[in-house]
Length: 637
Image (cartoon, helix red, strand yellow):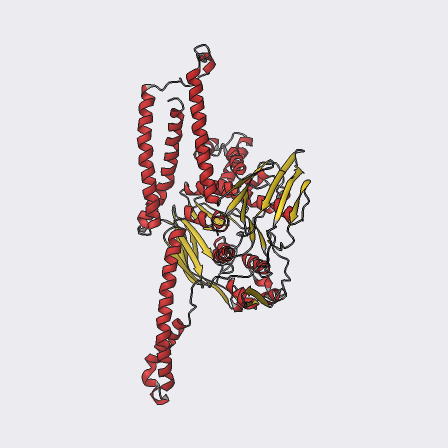
């Protein structure tokens, strides 16, 4: 495997805080690598180092000579006066430079080097760059191509930057939280795009389904060290638990031996000290192992919520619409009725701009409906975790910000938890609690915001995009909390894994005021939707075939009317082609399944892993091409 990025013995600290020490890893040709860590562990710093924007104490960061690298940053910046399409050209790297050189050549008398430039334009497929840019931007729901970047929201700017990265045609992609600000349809499109792509990929994300389906190697930054797992996210979970169990067993053994050695050290006469120097040195090493942090799942945190009555809220024929920028009307809700049940846990999904956050704000009374009303039960006590972070006094310590809300949290049943214990459960160790808020990473501030919402003991939690910027460990704690939560929950999220773990049914915002109520989680909804779409295609094909069969000779179109369409009957050659395609598709599907199982097994050598990672996207593309051809022939069968 040819390494595109090679990091050796890298160390980074901020004062006394060591982020990582002597870490090494590489990303090779065709490898898809996911990097995960707790907030504050140094992911963003590591990405900044790789991008050349931050220094480090020791080690090496080496890219292979001649490779093209494109990086998606968490908060990309553009000249606000640039149009969206010009912004795409401004960050297209060598491709944009090639187009610029071609245009300059055309304007130069004699057109020097034009033949070579045309050949390179052909080779790099640069002729249709603007068309491809608009296609990708449209997939990411950016359609106002001439709109100035300065008029876009932060999420829209991130999507323009993502389009830039994909359009740059690099050898290696480096993506920092690529799924933030994408709706589920966009995430699934990007997931499929990256799976089919054999470019090297290094990615930071907390989207666990995305990790599982895109990455074949997981890197975990934990406790200043780096651990590598050669498999997808499911394989990582299994092997990490094995590592934790082995470490805990080692620490337990060291603790037992440490106690015996400590007793011996205390009883050892001073005069014999030089005689047992080797044992003293061994004792020091043993002490270091015994004092390691024990890693294990924290006890589930069951917090008492305030009493909630049987009357929760009722949306009585609510209507809401806005005037859009094109002079039309954007309808959010139209005669929407819903009676929310006690202890219900509901997910809200839909494309960006369909009104999910507006619905939440109407429920909270922050936005007024145009017609209809929300009737809220008297016992309802909302806890709202919004997309915007809570406005903290950054000069306060973490523990002081929480103690301003409560010194002690009532867990119910006579159980109580101090503010310090509550913060520790949500992954703020005691030393971090004494830090000032301005020292926290963006993800840690989000986690602190979450703590301040939960510790108020609400009985109705509304979580608007809770998974943005929260690390996987925090999400797991939150999922356990919500599973035990004795109240109502509404989750607006694009994180499919989180939705599957938390909600029991969905409101699907489809746009133009249409809202579907689905009894199940997101994966069940997608399965139902796929079956529905398949049935509709079958019904459509059957209807078309029946209509053709009923045509009278007079109704059938003439050759001139067909305008070059294929004949209604398959030729002998096409029938044989269709039979061959069926066999090919079956074989390709079997091969694809075998490769996916092998990639998840963790038993492959590096060479085998590279070979199969390269084969899989090509296989998927071949399978899609043959399937499309089969459908085309089947239409005339």
